Length: 401
Ligand code: C5P
Image 1: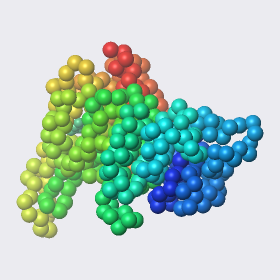
Image 2: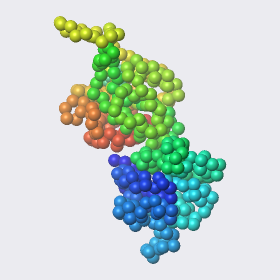
Image 3: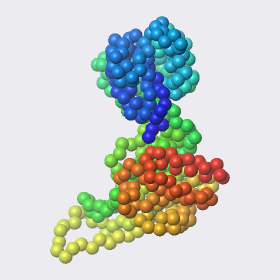
Image 4: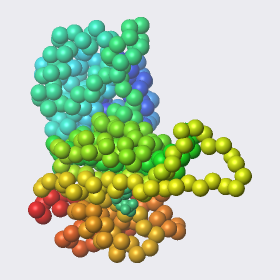
């Protein structure tokens, strides 16, 4: 479930070669549940047909400010009014210049003039045009006026030049449109999230680890980022793309995770430790690959540092520490014990045995325990939705102080 679900997004397309990617962006926004209306400039129509956008959006495309075929509505005002958000992709030097300077002479620029909702501008053009003083000045003006600007990617452009100017990938833009509309209730907060398993080597080719996929931790990091926090994600090896706009620190062992967390601990407001840290590591780790021999092999394990407990001892007033507890039995009893012994403010506990196991799954069922509030027993739900509820509970703790 996305924050764009049920929202109205107006997609503005201006006349650049990247206009073909706007069709994919329309689909990406729809996949997030948005109802998308398309507005095109005259030049955009020369790159991609109006019918393509109409067939996919299921709405007529707005292209001509002088063509009003619904007498009860003035279309540019109607679209501006119903938009929860607007994204212009690609935004040419021309449309950027018009909006920055208050010119409203076509369907898109006229509609933009009336919009009250947040607007995202995705410049895409030749690198030299993009770097020109006029375009940069206009982008600065738009930024000061509260428009959200997405930097273009660098790469090989249609004009045979390599440099900044490519329209970023549609799924990235759709994600940023979603982030634009999310409430920023963690603005300026510095957050450290750990995720995934740790991997403890036996020899150069073998290791012990666990089934953690990292999904829950990544969803939490993404939710914080969208809600305005500055996020550092210390992650064990996982098969998930790094979240946008997040510092990702990749580690393998629990010792490395502890070190990276300690280095960053000083200025952090909130720590959420979702990682499934291996409790033990190999004591006699072999320098070379262990050869097969008769009579089996004894591995000696020694305890890993308890990261959150170690950090908990250094906890400063105002910092919020959240832990996770994966239990196969006595959920409440074990969770409450950990809340106390690890000096946590909140613990998110889930049963990992049986059919409800959260490992690798898209859904999770948890109970949230805090020091002062009654436990929250939540239903089985999508990890993204759950991530937002966990963040809501963290806000409650903060407001309770
Ligand atoms: O493994 P356990 O159930 O004790 O984990 C509870 C919490 O403690 C989790 O948030 C986990 O990330 C954290 N933990 C840790 N260092 C360990 C073991 C667990 O920070 N060595």
